[in-house]
Length: 155
Image (cartoon, rainbow, N blue to C red; front, side):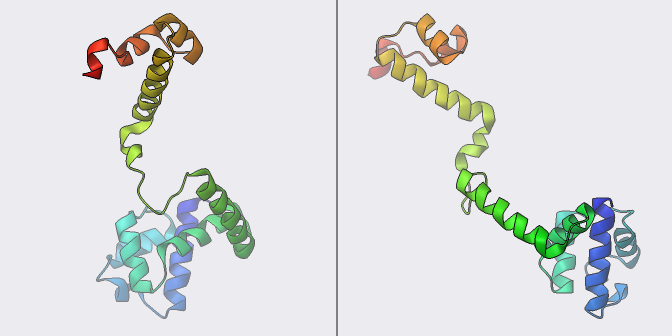
């Protein structure tokens, strides 16, 4: 089952179980739009999903979890247990954090550039030549040149 269709089904079931008509959610989304979302013919934005879930009294993450399990054809509780394990792995690996990772705003190239800069300057202080550093780090000599400290940089 397609994810959008599964999401729509879950939203419809939560709404019906809550005893709400589509008209009862009109302050958040139009009746026709909600009908399209519930049929899986229309996507829903994150903001509208949050607002709709607030109206329905359910956390958006739980609705998405149920839709993912359904689209994968898995039992909801088993799927949730597998996600718990995966979540712990991601936290331990640093992929997910409670606080914002400010270095992520640098992007992959920016983080790599900072790593290269530190490595180049460390190897430079050990007396290696530009060519030796480039070979050792597997980078181009122009990258080494970009981060090479001249004698005036220490001032």
